[in-house]
Length: 89
Image 1 (cartoon, rainbow, N blue to C red):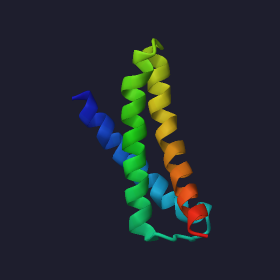
Image 2 (image 1 turned 90 degrees about the vertical axis):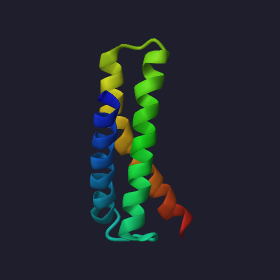
Image 3 (image 1 turned 135 degrees about the vertical axis):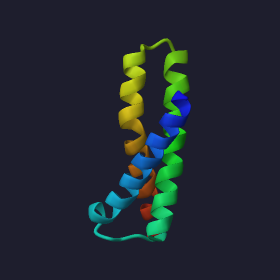
């Protein structure tokens, strides 16, 4: 059940980051709004799942895992959107 909640939360994070990409880069959307949403959702889910499983496997605490799951997916999605914009120039 926790994994379903995690994926749902990462979808919401991806949607928020996809929408924020417009104001951050002043509506320069080389792959469109839908493309930003798709790229940010996929990235947020992937990074969230990696954090969820890898951080405890490395021996770190649950507090660090929760902090990583809360912060890194959004930063990862922003990084991917920035890379897409840099590649489209």
